[in-house]
Length: 535
Image 1 (cartoon, rainbow, N blue to C red):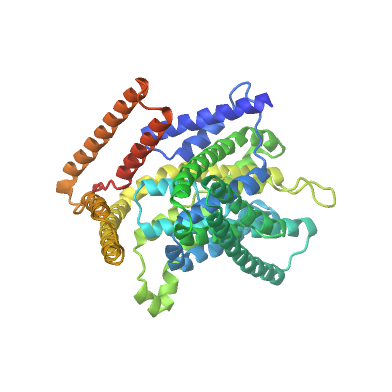
Image 2: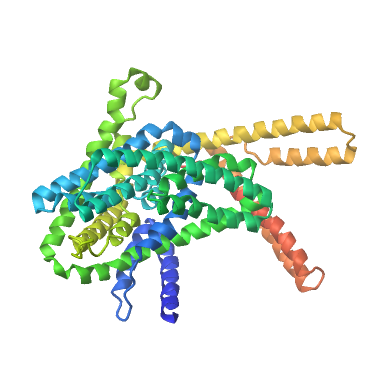
């Protein structure tokens, strides 16, 4: 037990170190975490750390999927549902079939094993590419499509994966039955996920206690995921539906105190989960090398290279028709939603990084068939899946910034950020105007004292004065200087309060209340900080 805890502490130290280095050299933390995990696995004296598949599929995946779903806008998800479905369902099935065909005819894998391998490596990850893409300032719609695909494609993969395992284990497969099962799982999980989201919000609204509400929020993704998974579904579709429902309906039912504390809680938890997941994924290299001795090294590398090439070719071969063919056959769609340029499509196709879900699915393969024979090519599938993750994460992860820069896609994203901030400033002003109109109505309808009205109007004027007139680059320097000066004033207050505490003029409880107000003010300044990005 002590040794496991020491390994956990080593992983936390490695996570903090890789995050610091990644920020200094401007590289995605997921890439360095994976490489650090590989390096740690071969440190002399380091015990073998096996990543239990149930840890990813049952413990780690639900909160990751749920958190991303809550953060996603239902309006934007619905507006891009066509392309998200084509990628999350169509591209995964197409890739799995292409991998099965290539591995069957070129390296002689049985059809069932090839299709199983294809299902495992087909889905792009939702974590790593989004972390890289957001840093590059890509267009908003591209990020929505990539995130929506990453959320939904794991469900397709796990369903195909189970069909393939059953087919290999029993030697029987019925396409009509599989299609009907897939449709039934989709419908049932959507309904169940929406119900869990509705129930969770009502329970949290009745609780009216931040600690209880955050605990319920932590339970929510597991309820949405584990129950459908227990009855043979994927669990992911229900979790996504639940997260989207809560993200869209939650703002009016979740209290401010819960929201503030919940944001910090979930940010830290997701940061730890994602970092430790990639570290543990890297740790599997040593274990996989030990298991791969049953296969010739040349065969393993040939299979890995073949599958890596096939999944890249399959994604490009699918993405372009998926984006352009519907508009070619539908003039109405072409008019309402013009096709993006080829650079936009190329970046979407290029962002095909595989992640820990693929490795977890490979690790979850049974060791033996019902007849007692060993599961065919299990270790080969494991090693190929890991190599594909390594190649796509490191290769595409490091290559994506170069591709985005060469194609000039970052400029479009930065222009969208400026437009988004300008719209936000306008919305804030209109909201303050609506509040002022409500104050006028309150003054007319209620017997409010002049002091109360004066106080409320002063609050309104203060908040109005904090908004910039616009995002004019000429005023950016003055705005930044003003923000820095406010931070200095807050720091001066903190020092004075500390002196008051040290001299015994205030209690620790008073100091904590004052510090909380200063913390909220400083966080509010950061939240309203509009910087014009270089174009």
